[in-house]
Length: 471
Length: 103
Figure 1 (cartoon, rainbow over the protein chains, first blue to last red):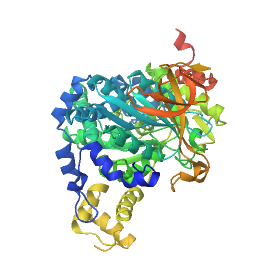
Figure 2 (figure 1 turned 120 degrees about the horizontal axis):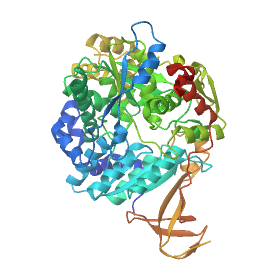
Figure 3 (figure 1 turned 135 degrees about the horizontal axis):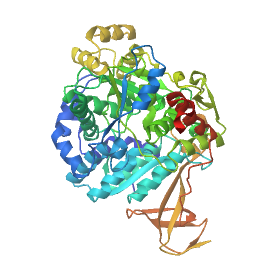
């Protein structure tokens, strides 16, 4: 009889993962702290053409881009003369499962089937679960989704409860858990029990699946407007959305396009806290995932995450829950597009950033998501109010996550707040050093850190000096 | 209430007791167990509260306390949030001005 205690299962983690993903990550490891990211992506992922074919066969991709003319007009009302870029949105909600996550899932499930797995398992409370379930339905594999749903009072976030329904609608088994990171333990047990494929969000094929989004976006903009967008805004949580999109843009040759990450500010709330679980109104796209995963991507459920957003990010901004809810309502009321709130995180940021840009420039939000019962501003705000969160009109800068949600009194109060990129990049270096308990790094490590931070040798060596690391 | 063999039910089980929780878990979370809910076809007649066995939709066997028979989705669009109405009115006023929207 196998020892299935928490510690015993966690100690079998690497072995379970190797069987459940079919990648031997150790072959990409170098001496020291670095690994060969591009080689891993090349040898275990798919080419752009292959991915387009795989996704095309299941109806994924080729989503339309809409110009948000009223949103642009609104932004210009609050801009300096000549300012106020044209705002666009890529309607990824049109994918089979209702979000861009179908792109990641299509590849992961295709890969699982190719390797002969009978089923797929994913640990996710969000759109990715629905995407994996939808793809599993299409490709004839079994599917189990493990989600963190309830607090200890048995109260579930409406958005997550809805996601369970959607997964079950596609024929998946949904295991729901109460709050806590030990979800990973149960996830490992299920992988071991079933022998299914780990359809992790962070594998090379999953991330490569999003490259088609960036590529497609560039091609569509060139065809219709004759040039690439000046800025692409990505809602950022685990980093895969931004990583894949940016890699796709690079493959399209859109190297002058600025890539901006946007997360909902949930500072002060602990993501694994039972009592704070239902005091937040966003279950993804927030700083509670965005910052830790950006600064230390290898905290994910695979040994080396293929989502490494700091390699591609030019700027990182936060917006507030109230601003995103406001923009979600605005999108419906002035653009006639009713979409889910979480995907509109980047829209709130884009509305603010557009005001800094020239009128002949273009800014695009690269996703939308489906909406419905539970997963909609109305039930999410109603749930917040029931949980004692104050909701009122005011200035969003005064918001306190977990205490109130401040809807901007006027649209000019919507203001994306820049995170300090230097500090964030230094955290990438520090976390890579700490994770390996390194005291000295090689030239190969330095070059790795340059790529990991999208900086130069001077930045990395100066940071290493500050940390007291020899090189 | 009784469940007949073969009916679709929801069961509940504690995965980790408070004292078994992971070291990195915050203090408030350590006070409570890690709980699990899953649905399946019940393998024998039982009453609510009984420890039962189910076969899940993927064919796995799971056991736990019977908590619901024919489990129903109850999530909705929540209670009305009046503030949302105001947003549309404000934006239309700003963009299209006063009565012009009605012309």
